[in-house]
Image 1: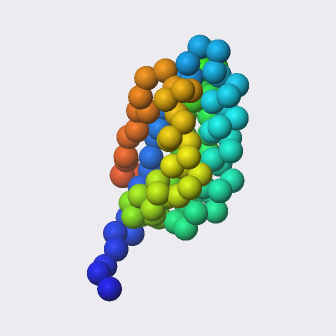
Image 2: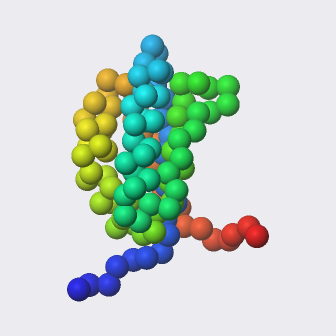
Length: 105
C-alpha cells in the first residue's frame, strides 16, 4: 500500500446565493453538514454566513489529509449539491486550501 499524506489540510470555501435563492442555498448547504462531519478524516466542517452579507456563505473545513477531502468530494451528498449548485450560486465557488503554520494555545 502506498503511503498517504496525513498532513491536516484546512479548506475555506466561499459562495454567494443568487438573488432570491438565499434560503434555498442555506438549506442545501445545511444538509451537507451532518453527512460530511461523519466522513472519514473530517475534523471540522462548519457553515457560516458573512456578517452583513446574508447571501454570502462560507465553509470552514479541516481534514486529516487531502485524500480525505478529495474522497468526500466524490460522496453522493456533495456530488448531488454540485450538480444543482448552478441554479443556486451567483458565480463560482471560491475554494482555498491552507496548511497550518502555527497553532494557538
